[in-house]
Image (cartoon, rainbow, N blue to C red; front, side):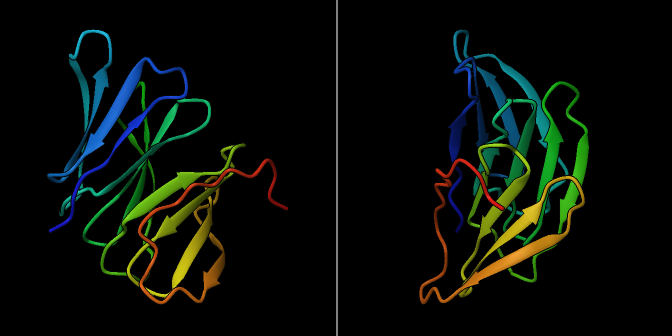
Length: 139
């Protein structure tokens, strides 16, 4: 069974959680649920905020990745990696790319504007279960 994640927004005012097919946005000060990001068909084990805090990425146990507008809750884009589950999602520091991890041997890098896969990082034996993209620029 997939386990959900929790991530803070860059300004620390909000948190996003995922687990049961829905990602939820929370006000950290009050604990109030502000919004739901619904549409996944499986558990949501991966969540991330964009560096500017305006977009949330979610990864699903059905293998899809979605980008959501934080202010409206609308789905902006959907990626369909050829995997059965997405364990990890993380934005690049400039928000231009999204890196995804799954049980297979490759992490995948996506262009957030076009939805196109940019490249794969192949060679993982046990899959990619977590991502921390701490670089300043990808070219």
